[in-house]
Image (cartoon, helix red, strand yellow):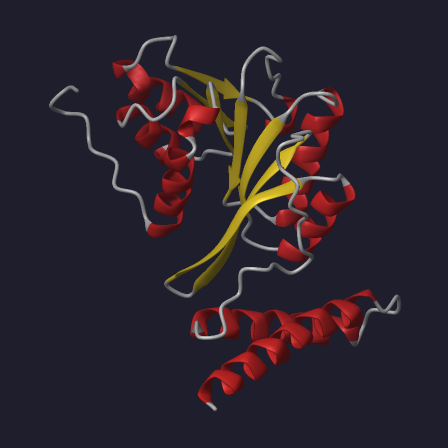
Amino acid sequence: MPQDTPRVRLKPRLKRLFDVIQSRAAHYDSVWDCCCDHGYLGMKLLRKHVVPRVEFVDCVPHLMEDLRIRLGEFNATQCGVTCADAGSIALDPKRRHLVVLAGIGGELAATIIDSIISRHQKQQIDFLLCPNTAQYYLREFLIGKDFKLIEENFLKEKRWNYEILYVSYHNASIQTDISAIGQHWQPKNQDHLDYLKKMAIHYGDQSKSCTSGKAKSTAALYRAEIELMTLSLNGNKT
């Protein structure tokens, strides 16, 4: 590594995504760091030799030009840089792919995923997702498209809350259904409980102006989970 090349120190959210990828790196030939911004996650994957190839994708030209310069230490077999809409990527059916979408809203993530799978309808593709917003919307989309769950997680970074969804499309070996609000909540984890309360309040507020009743039913799901967690916690104290 050149002496003047800065090391990449990931913040907790990206570090968690890195750890998930590293734990299952043997399953992939290519990782697509989509909407990659400065490419910190993909750069770390390259420098740690986690996967054979990393593809960086973002639609902002100056970010991609800067990334091309910073990737000068690697050769063309190790990585690629594409300035384009992430939904337009072409996935070689002969290779095993993991598509990463983090740092964007759940609705945009769903749009990108829909575009990708509509052009690769018979292809097995895994996705690692960490949306900033609209987590419930994204979960509903994935359920509707018959995605299956590999694993899910939750991370609090400063004042921000992140759900992490690791899911698979057209993978017969993965049979776990995706929950509309998640199944990994821990009664003794105050961050989990606080997050669920925040979501219940958010959809409860939305229900006041939502005539379809959708927001009200969504708020009810979160409240039911909070009640179950509370009962479980109180039961453990007796």
